Length: 316
Image 1 (cartoon, rainbow, N blue to C red):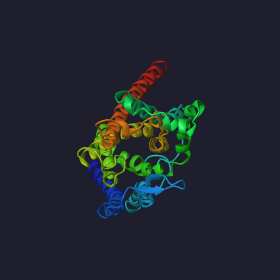
Image 2: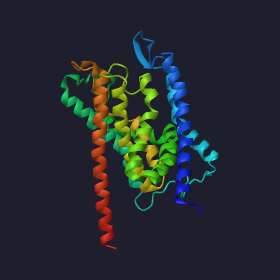
Image 3: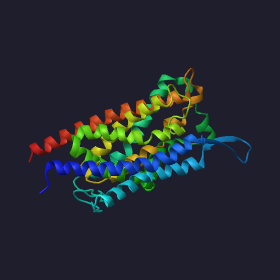
Image 4: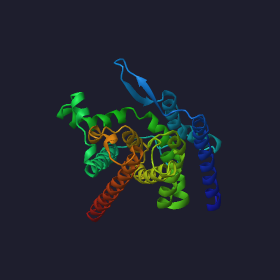
């Protein structure tokens, strides 16, 4: 019979092994890119002669590989710590899908939530800076009202289908790291510590110019801080829906939907029109607004869930 001290020692060991591989696999190549000053964006000349900025294919490949690294780290940690590869159950990889007992609601919420807080954050920016409202892009593309209504749902559907990269992260963070952190530090401690770890894992990407670019106040420290606040809030939601369903798939869908959100409001946002604010600073504000609206939605969902459960308990 293992003592509590021995169990905690095993948890710390498995976490250390997992975090070592998760960080080394990403930090080494990404910081090499940073050291060599590999550009995040490249100017591409199109067939009509116009120049368009697009993400560097080498950087795009690196970011895609990075998303798979937490899953690789999880598999290595399970191998080294002899924990097995069960798909479902206690101590498993939580890869099963369960929709009964209204668990499907959490899958649906995971897909919808990113669109809600992204539209709310972008709408707030447009209200604060009406000069950056521009309908020229929508008119140029000939987008119909029906298309604009369907646009967010297209993003949700696409995210659900193309969620391999998000699975790579969630298999590690929510499927391996968070259950162990919760056993060691409780739910609140795990959410905060896990969110900080998740955010810090992205720091080399931010140094490359991911998320905020390079033209913002106190670069890169403000980028680190804002992104970490966002990952703490996102970690709280992901951890909640994983615990509610016993599966990492809702977190996978949420992560994919957040990365691939199709925002109607952003089609009307021309950041280069904002007066007196660098585009990078506007992106920081957008991330903070997204975090704030996400937190409000999370609190609201938690309240409704508690009220619903208390009503069910009182009638049984």
